[in-house]
Amino acid sequence: MLICRLNKGESVPTKIDGLKGAITELSGFPLFSGFDQNTISNLCLGGEIRVNKHRDLLFQFGLPAQQFGIVLSGAYKLSRVTPSGEESVIYFALPGDVVAALIMPQQGATYPVTVRAMGNSRILLLKKDIYLQSWIKIPDLIIQIQCLLSTRMNRFQNQKVMQRAPLASKVASLLLQLVTKDSNKDELEVPLPLTRKEIADNLGVAVESVIRVMSDWDKQGYIMTLDQNIVILKPDQLVHQLEYEAN
Amino acid sequence: MLICRLNKGESVPTKIDGLKGAITELSGFPLFSGFDQNTISNLCLGGEIRVNKHRDLLFQFGLPAQQFGIVLSGAYKLSRVTPSGEESVIYFALPGDVVAALIMPQQGATYPVTVRAMGNSRILLLKKDIYLQSWIKIPDLIIQIQCLLSTRMNRFQNQKVMQRAPLASKVASLLLQLVTKDSNKDELEVPLPLTRKEIADNLGVAVESVIRVMSDWDKQGYIMTLDQNIVILKPDQLVHQLEYEAN
DNA sequence: CGCTCGGTTGATGCACATCAAAGGCTGTGG
DNA sequence: CCACAGCCTTTGATGTGCATCAACCGAGCG
Image (cartoon, rainbow over all chains, first blue to last red; front, side):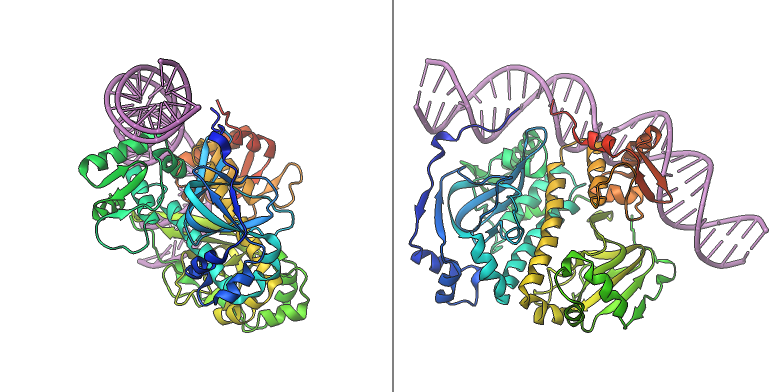
């Protein structure tokens, strides 16, 4: 069962060289906190803003890694294909997140995942060289990058700890993880278009199982889905799913 | 079902301040490749070599992280306890691996995992300050650290891709991952004492299931277990387990 | 209007969990 | 020295959560 299908038109990604506006956006991310706009522009020399539509391909697993990216808006999906042809979603990258930065230092490295846009998204692409020649030499920047990686690593670890939990717990955990911005009471919105298949592929389970869990929550009024945008109406109820009674 | 039990005596870890001998060891690791012994000793100022016995506690999940480590010999197990009281093994750190380096930059960070020795092991403990004041400023060192992290991240990703594979594939994948040194033909030895429970806790499955898979391999002559040391007699057969037919 | 895609539901089956029992080994204390 | 407790391993019997298979619906689209 092959997954690859031609994306309608495979839209030639727009390329915009002037990135004045983006600098302001960048200065709002934790990655660049404490840097003035001048420094930021120097750090982004030779950068290119890529504007993507839903499912546009950004990086392809296995190809030589020449660039890394900083997500500006929207979201990107990092995934790989399993030996049996299924898609396995590794990570969802949101604005402010870096993509492929970790492998820049390695000689002849290839992308360890395939990266695709989810919905309309924008990303700033930077050349490998700038990472090796500028970024690496700025301790404050390295610290910020390591913080981002640490967060991501933590997420992996949390998923590992949940491995033996029932499916409902895993789905709840994933959804809650994605909204960890301001945990203001009721009405959290998952900030990216997410199909049930993508959730299943991330958790490594069957679509139908995810659907059974989520449409139940839908009926209970815990969540709401509008055109692939998920809204958590009762966060407390989802948190409750996490405590699956230690027998 | 609580797991915490007093380790017989909880042996007071030996502390040795002179680390002359260790410098030679360190210079053999990829982490310090390209550094002369003088530089290495400066990078390890204030370091302390901890000698541990089987199951000695090194770092405790949740406590403030003041130190990081470089495994010298033996192995260390990074794990967490699940909400239901089971142990979840996140990672096995072998000689040359760094532990807790990634979280050094974060203010008031706590250890994200509990770390215990597996068998007799030695680790070089370094202070947070040295990381922030020296390490971070040396691009070549940062590059090596990021390579180590990249390898670890890759391992997580591989496990994620195998999530839907049958148990036998997962066990095979884990064992093969641990011996990825020189893949010289037949007779690979897993370089750390590993119980079936630890394998199970790493894969997030039941002990009995792991045992059923492995004792089958034992009978087939694919592997051999001597006192918790696993030897892979027929690597090809284990590799064969990975290709679980994409129907 | 046929196509594909995402979501949904029900019937059936299987891989693995769970429970139970037992033997070997090690360290510990009476 | 032996009894005992823990841990690791093993094996069998039984149960179940989720996968799999199949079918259907509505929406968007060329």
